[in-house]
Every structure is written in structure tokens, then in C-alpha cells.
Amino acid sequence: MSERSRILILGARGRLGGALHRCYAAQHDVSAWGREELDLLKTDQISDRLAQVSFDVLINAAGLTHVDRCETAREEAHLSNEVAPGEMARFCAQRGKRFIHISSDYVFSGSGHRPLVEDDEAAPINFYGQSKRGGEIAVLRENSRALVARVSWLFGRDKAGFPDMILRRARQEAEVSAVNDKWSSPTYADDLAEWLELLFTRHADATGLLHLCNAGEAQWQEYGQATLDLARERGIALRTTQVRGHSMQGFEPFDAPRPPYTVLDTGRFTQITGITPRPWQQALAVHLDQTLADAEADAVADADEAAQR
Image (cartoon, rainbow, N blue to C red; front, side):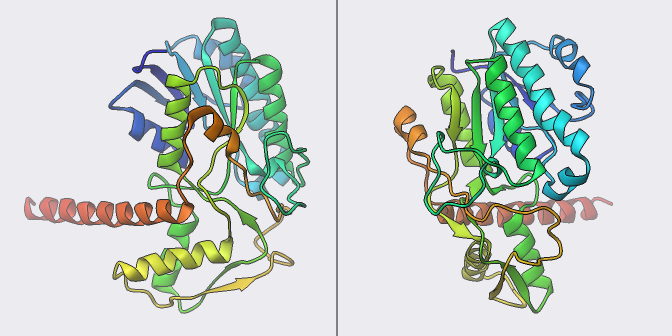
């Protein structure tokens, strides 16, 4: 495939979709769709809708990702996360288009204690994970050339995530806590965008399941503490500089069970591309620096606007 591609991004209003649009806009011809352009619940209309736009690569970053909501809105989760991706995969297979589907570490039970490879058994313990696993199966059944990328703990500048929430709370509250008995691998959306671009421009033979995340592992408490440590180093005023730990057991905001250990092994990605993802701590530092730069730019823009009134 040529370096410049026609890319259709689904889920463009989300954390990853926004990053893909922003990172690809200068180098590729990008169409970015949200729910207004394609309603995943209307699965019988997906093929007709996709036929209305020309693209070389379809990246599906859409779906129902609210873990607890999936427990009660099961039909919506089933259609969005399983049936719709299968329809997309079939459409791309029939027309020879590249299809990349974003999946999740929640397809695993989390019962082990070593980084998970693509061939490890998928045994989800909540309906979100079940629907995402169903989506993987549907995609690869309909399109043997599709790429299914499992990602975990995504953060980025296009939509607030866990580090942004921890930082906001530490600036406003005297005490902040996070789960200390659940481990995974944080993933920076801009890094993920770069890896996906490398795969669809230079590694068309990369198909099937692939794990993508930044290097290293963390529990939520450690992830939050690293965020506050980096913020303090950058002179950000905080009401508290410590993240207190607590167990998932009996944690009221959780309606659905969470897998305790879903650290992903990215060895297959490195074998394919020769690239080793940087540590999540380095990516988090870049994210915080960019967040500060964005805030400063917004403040300047607001001041300029006020001066012109």
C-alpha cells in the first residue's frame, strides 16, 4: 500500500478515534465518522452506509466500552461490539479493503500472573469482555485478512482518561484513592496511532490477533501515583500528592467484575515491525507535557478573544 492512504475512522469522537484523526489528517485522506454518520445499532444498514465512501483502510474504534453499562444494556453491547464489527469485516473482505478492529484486554479472565500472548485462552468474566470476544470471532470469521488489535488502559489528549481524572481530583480533593489489586498495561493513544499506521502502510501481511500497548505493567494505584509524581515535577499545584490504595472487592462503583491481571505481551508486534513500544511512564510524561501545552494554548486563545470584545 502506498504511504498515503484513504482512511475511514469509526468512533471518531472517542479517545482513540480522535487521536487517529488528529495524527493521520496531515499524511492521509481521512474520513472520521461518529454515531451521527454510522449508528452501530442499525446493523442492517452498515454495508450500504460504508458503500457511500471511498477508503483503503477502515479502522473500527467504535463500540460500547462502558463496562458496567454493558451488563444491563446487553443487546446494545452485542450489536455494537459483536454484530456490527462482523458486518464491517464482511464488507471489507468482499471489496478487498484493509480492516483493523480494536478489541480489549478484557477478553481475558485475568486469573494468571504473566503477560498474555495472542494465543492464550480468551475467557471473559463480564459481558463487555464477552461482547468484545464475540466481535473478535465475528471479524476473523468474516475476514481472514483483518487485523484485530487488543489494547488496554488507553489514555490520550482527545478525551479525558484515568490520569486526567486522577490529576483533576488531586487538584481539588484532599484524598485520592485507586484500585491496587488490578494490573494491566497503560497505552498512549498517540503511540497506538503510530503503530497502527506502521502496520497498514508497511505490513499488510499483519493479520489476526495482535497485542498493542506501552511496555511495562502497573496497578491503578501505581499508575495514579506516577501521574501525580510527574505533575509535581512540573510544578502543578496539588492538594494531595499521594494516591491511597484500595481493593476491587466491594468497590461500589463497579457493578461488573473486572479481570485482575491482563498485562499484554507485545512480542508479536515487535517481531513484525522491529519496534519495541516505549515504557508507559515515558508516554505518560509526554501526555502530561502535552496537556499542559494545550491548557496554555487555550488560555492564550481565551485572552486574545477577551481582548477583542
